[in-house]
Amino acid sequence: MKKFYIEGGHELAGTVKVSGAKNAALPIISAALLGSGPSRLEDIPNLRDVRNLAKIISKMGARVNYENNTMEIDPRRLEHFATDPELAGQIRASYYMLGVMLARVGQARTSLPGGCSIGNRPIDLHLKGFKSLGAEVDISQGFVELKAEKLKGSRIYLDYPSVGATINIMLAATGAEGQTIIENAAREPEIVDLANYLTVMGAKIKGVGTDVIRIEGEEELQGEEHRIIPDRIEAGTYIIAGALMGEDVYVKNVLVEHIKPLLAKLEEMGVALEEDIAGVRVAAPEKLKSVDIKTLPYPGFPTDLQAQMMVLLTQADNASVVTETVWEDRFRHVEELKSLGARINMDDNSALVKPARLSGADVIATDLRAGAALILAGLKAEGVTSVDNIGHVERGYEDIEEKLTGLGAEIERAEETIESQVTTA
Ligand code: EPZ
Image (tube, rainbow, N blue to C red; front, side):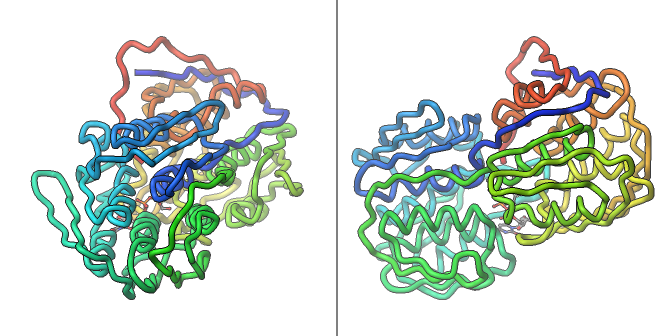
């Protein structure tokens, strides 16, 4: 497994550039299969999940060329409606092929996305949406297969504003006759980015960014050019690194309105932030004040920054409460942080984080954001911290080692002996 050795205590200074958003790139790459011609997608981050999805669509018959963060996708020779089971098992977002292929050919098949270390991760809301559009759903032996003679637009109320279900239903609805209305839809910026791309392709979509999305189906969609939005979670992670260890860190390529919930909390903690059109400048204050955070769907505080924020809260002047409401099992970083000296008491879905001095130890990344949090903790901790299973982190952070080293962090990568076994985002 890959490991980082991090020598803590080095101040960070300089500029770090945020990459394109993984969680926007994955549905947008999928949506490119809906075009009648080739699409050119820019700022696609070079990450394992992205490369896997590119392999999946290539195996289905699309032509994919991926160089210098630009992906060209030509879906004209797409001939399979099913995903390769082995590849699809490695990446959860392969389930976007369900919505896409249902819209394109009225038939789709993929492996059921497996469990992952942050919670149960069911897809019942995706399936409810597909059924409501007229698809038959068959689940057997770990596969989900959809078939529809004809998709018909309908009104779908989501019991929870699921990001994945909103995306999958939007994708399927582009192929349905008439209007589809998604109520209690998710409002994440990645959904807005997907809708912007679908709209330039020719789709008729209204209401994205609100909780009611209307899609008028059966428009002819063209291949198009699109640039992916900056990754708000990557941006947030480097801003938190700046609040923790920054002498003067400028995080550029940030859409500030996407990270307001984080910036508001940092300001409450006493972190001085300077925002401009392209980014955020941040430095670690003398003293950090404690704050409570509760994760919620957008525009609430993002669950994908909960672990990283917890590290910062260990350095506050008083105890803080962190409540996780999105995923039922997203506190696996707590035990690892405790190995570094953090004082955290768990109670159900809340963690009481008390001030503590962190010191280097050997820890393991249990998932993508937990791994990012442990790297941040390593930057602060006295002595050397080793973070094992770094493959998780590299699924979501392009060039994290180079970016942090560029700011003055001391990070060394250990020899890779066995390819790490990681599950998916
Ligand atoms: C997306 O996952 C992101 N992944 C996650 O980021 C992120 O944590 C999550 O949204 C919430 O913001 C991608 O975009 C690839 P959900 P998704 O459906 O779509 C329940 C990262 O670190 N639910 O909004 O899978 C579910 O169990 C990753 O980059 C159902 O009950 O999230 C969870 O409790 C991790 N039934 C809640 O909804 C369903 O059918 C939110 O899930 C679907 C979801």
